[in-house]
Length: 275
Ligand SMILES: [Zn+2]
Image 1: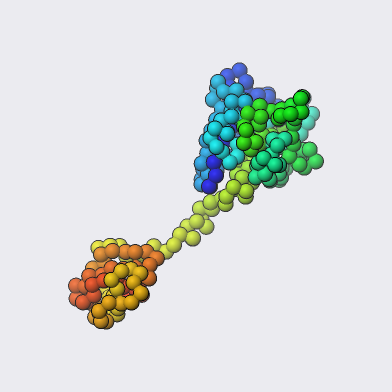
Image 2: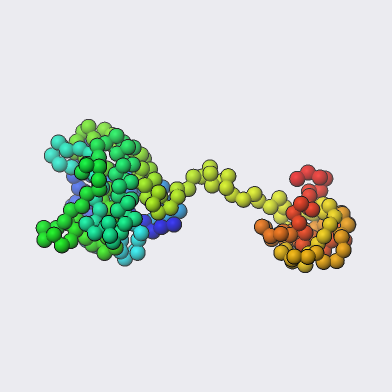
């Protein structure tokens, strides 16, 4: 799976970001989404690193993404603009399309997924945004500019200073939407129920079990092409070794049978006939 860096926006002393319409700080919202997102991505098998300690500036946060050799860096924010603006936006590097195409692709998926999950408007005509610096030679935002891998995305789920947007805020849905988008590009999400079904059937026996051998060939190794010796008699045997997935997965030493070698799975049953 992939290495994902999460930067919780405005997690610094003296910078808690925008003021929400209900009095909370933007950082509180960022933290709630970041915590859930980190848990979901970890559960999906990704290696998640959190950056952004109190003393870390935005450019340094971005640099931490490259330093961690991440496949994707997500900077989690909520927007604000005089209470009159609304909607979801995702900002990618001005160089992302060529330098980090997977991040660019993920930006679009996150924008769509978050908007759909909480019912917000897609900003920027439904496309991820970019912003040049004034000299038009680098990214404007430090957390994007500082990451030389060009794979930082700033996620602005909605406008926290706008009460109609804020009432849609749901950190579980937002985190799940972001995680789903990331996993669509960087790996499949782990579905606990499905994963259980796909787990190969466990060997029915453990080494040390006394089992019923129904008689037949035995082999010198678990993947030998030809049997050795003659046909062995049916009877009881001690299962001494298991080589799961091999042609002759059970090694038996007979107690009442004369088997002494590797045998096929269908020759072995539980004492008393039950399997
Ligand atoms: Zn912010």
